[in-house]
Image (cartoon, rainbow, N blue to C red):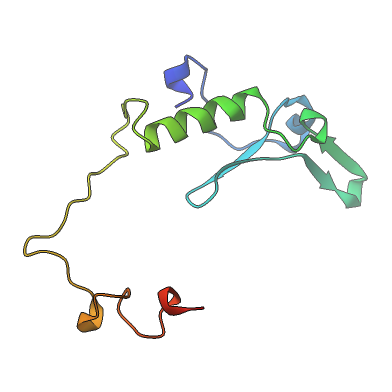
Length: 114
């Protein structure tokens, strides 16, 4: 996505000495998408590098990534990366495990909790 914004992209290891020079730091993953990092601390050196004034709110770069990603996921922004796949009903229709139509498959399922 960063390239599509016209940003320069480098794929490399980050040196410890570079940490103070960053304005924003974020973690990326499949489950969390993007999480802004408030600070990085190395107690043994007495170092603490803070980003975005340790705000709970994402910075402008993270916000742009999140907004674009969510827009693609919701179909509001064209997926130019080939990330989305259409899920269709299987041939022959839908059946549940165990043949029980009122739950996701088992009487003890979460759907049956009070």
